[in-house]
Length: 130
Image (cartoon, rainbow, N blue to C red; front, side, top):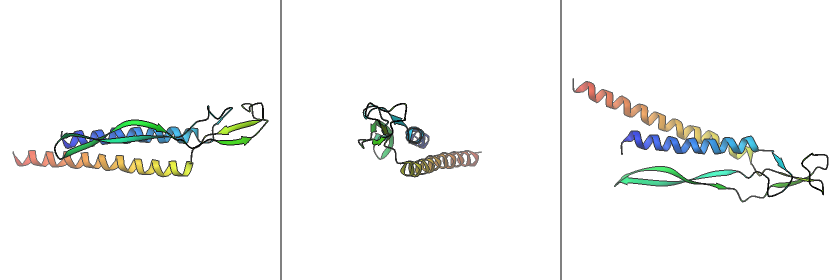
């Protein structure tokens, strides 16, 4: 496994993380007519992948759904309200999701920098051989 493989896999995992965060943010404030139908935030779970001794990367093993209950709100005028006039709002913490998005973008950017550095070092090595 090369540094390019390692960084590429890490970038792929961060992309899944970014997509789940974007989905969570897109559904923040969404309401449903039932508690079971309400959106719950998602988080990817990473696991290490070791293909050779001393060399490891990461992959997404699964995506977990939050166990935080949606917020019940009495809004009888809402078209999705149940017979009691309640709607359930998605259990998404927008501020925490924004922090997650910034952190994910930085991790992705770090891996892009690793790839750029590895490419530059490889090209410099090839130039030395001329």
